[in-house]
Amino acid sequence: DSVPLNVKWGKETIKVDFVVDSGVKGLKTELEEQTGVPADRMKLMAKSKGLWKGVLKDDFDLSTIDFAAAIQKSKELNLLLMGSATKLAAPKTKTVFLEDLPPEEIAKVAEPSGLVNLGNTCYLNSVVQCLRAIPQLRKGLAAYTPSQQQSSLMPNNSNA
Image 1 (cartoon, rainbow, N blue to C red):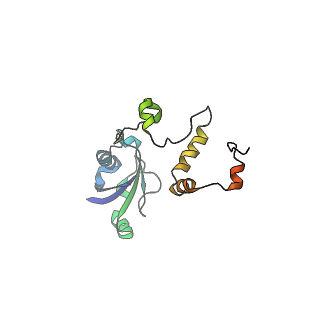
Image 2: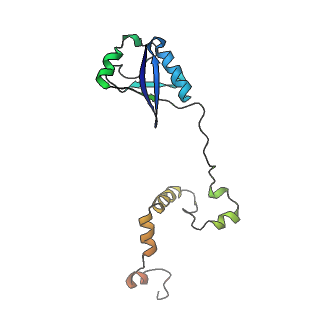
Image 3: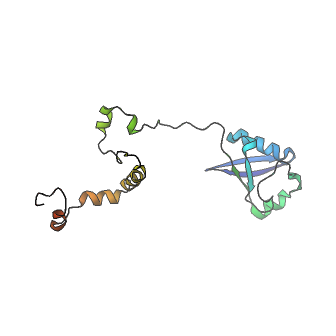
């Protein structure tokens, strides 16, 4: 008496052959083994018609659902699992911030991004860093040459 389920969790889709007699606890235990999400932190929602409405409650009687009719309607039974695993995956590479580097290493960085923080300039700094990531803007600024009229308005101009 097993029912095939597709459980969408983040970017993953997990296929589960669920035994209806094991109840909600059995389903959550099976998903905990496959995802690492603790059963008490799981929220399960039905994405296919004919199952339950809203978040699946722990005391819900799954034997009241006509799974055969639901499979005929939807062809596949899809659930959505929300919850995060207890053990988070470590990053593949350690993030190193510019502020944490010794001065010799900072000097090797060809194009430092952002501004020196002067107290509350971090918001402006984040905008500058976002704009820096746009290749078309960087190319346009690199190719820009001011006109004669604009260069006379510059403060470092020798004509001033």
